[in-house]
Image 1: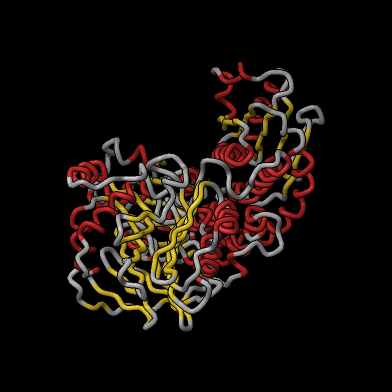
Image 2 (image 1 turned 90 degrees about the horizontal axis):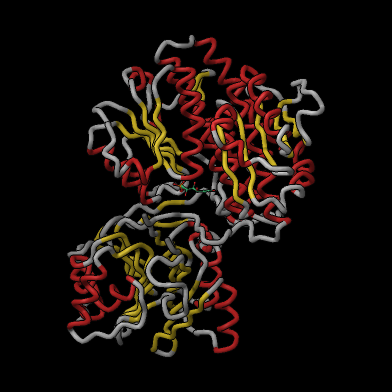
Amino acid sequence: MCGIVGYVGKKDCSEVLVDALRKLEYRGYDSAGIAVFEDGKIKVAKEKGRLDDLVEKMKREGVPCGHIGVGHTRWATHGVPSATNSHPHAGGDKVTLVHNGIIENYKELKEQLISLGRVFKSETDTEVVAQLLDYNYEGDPIAAIKKTLAQVEGSFALGILFADRQGELYAVRRESPLIVGVGEDETFIASDVPAIIKYTNQYYLLEHDEIALLSENGVSFCDLEGDKIEKELKVADWNQEAAEKGGYEHYMLKEIHEQPTAVKTTITPRISHKLPCLEECGVTAETLKDINQIYIVACGTAMHAGMVGKYVIEKLARVPVVVDIASEFRYREPLINEGDLVIIISQSGETADSLAAMRLAKKMGAKTLAIVNAKGSSIAREADMLIYTHAGPEIAVASTKAYMVQISVMYLLGFLFALAKGKIDEAECMRLTEILTSVPEYLEKTINDVDKDCEDISKHLLEADSLLYIGRGLDYALSMEGSLKLKEISYIHSEAYAAGELKHGTISLITEGMPVIAVATQVSLLDKTISNIKEVKARGAVVILVCDKEIQVDCDVADYIIRIDKIEECLMPMLAAVPLQLLAYYTSVHRGNDVDKPRNLAKSVTVE
Ligand code: F6R
């Protein structure tokens, strides 16, 4: 999981590459590098660390100067982060390339190449492709790429410079994403649109085993046989500002504030005559009526959105829903029957485990429905039915607005399912849908209402070694996400627990002063949750309670209370998510962490 870029044009190539890589740092940021044709030779600069470390190094040692080149930002998979393991990698004298993905058979290939006398510099799988391509290259780039691709297994997007082809940049992909951008007198390759949006919003999506040739004559495409391919030019509906911070201190904060708009943009086109309408996405009442078992498969935050979906769909439509972690689902021989519905949720649409799980489900005869944010991504393209969430680019590694739009789609689906199954009538479905459409306004208000409280209360979490999130029902589903958010960006251990389950073991962890964040928005479960809160309070916990403004609670129940507006009980997680996101955000800020790029993480997990 890395980011690659390439440039052919009249501008200073190094500057464009570094600028484009900055927009891809969310994909990995443990080392970076560029390679540029300078005076007929390929000049490489690479460094361990952030992009700024590379920039500093180039200031000291010289910036490659030219108009054609490739760049890379890395999240290490094979070999530690180091300058040597950084891309670009040269395969000898003839080839220099950047790679995003994994070469699965790199060990066998490396042994073969070593037996042919090739000497390796790095520990990476990428250098194996570079060496193999260099070995296969006899003056015809397409023939060499074809021969190499026949030998490598795995996922990859490659940006390639051939030393004797000074005016050309080649790109090819299998599995890993790659786009080819087209500006005025300039062309680009990139792993994702934000990298090039400053320069152009027009791009082609490179498909599996397609080759792109970028030169001063523009861009052309061919297959591995060298046969020309005509492709459809796409126009990104993002502008540069959408991909940048817009005045906020961090992308995460910006993205929290973008949630009202993101939800509105996602649900509005899916409501017709006051009812959810997903026909354009291939989801009709007819399809849903016959479904008797649902699986929701995803990773991390997207899986937590699935947990909310489970509670909503089961409660309203009375259809059983199993939520599965994609990396477990794909290897546990799931009991899928023909006609079951498997819902895959993914912001990036490229998560390796989620993609593999979806392919498995399809093979087993399930109907697949993808809920995806990244347009044209692999999961989006391969699913039987597809609902795009319209969150726009999510740059912060910690997902916020993508989660919010994912759960908004869960509600649309839940309402539609319940109607299709005859569990609610049209009037009730309209009522629920109307409340959902009012959520963006409430979200706006909630963000403003709780921001200051969250910032203040977060100061009481800074020194904690560990904390608990507790809740029941939908509050428990939401707590899982609150806990993940906190730990990934604050580096404080936390765990989400079903409040009623605490006394079966975990309550022994409570010691004097341990923070417990209790979510109690489900009025029907309130008394029981309050009893559980009292149990932890009695053992010394510092309780931070998230509840609605109308609930009456004794003043000794919690140390701090964050109040949010009261809406329909089943929709409360949409509002309650906000204080949990902000508590995590401010805790991370006050601990001095890199909020948008937490350690060891990357935005798009395209490896297992
Ligand atoms: C956490 C986070 C991750 C992702 C997970 C799945 O804030 O963002 O847990 O949710 O890696 O990613 P997608 O949704 O791209 O499949």
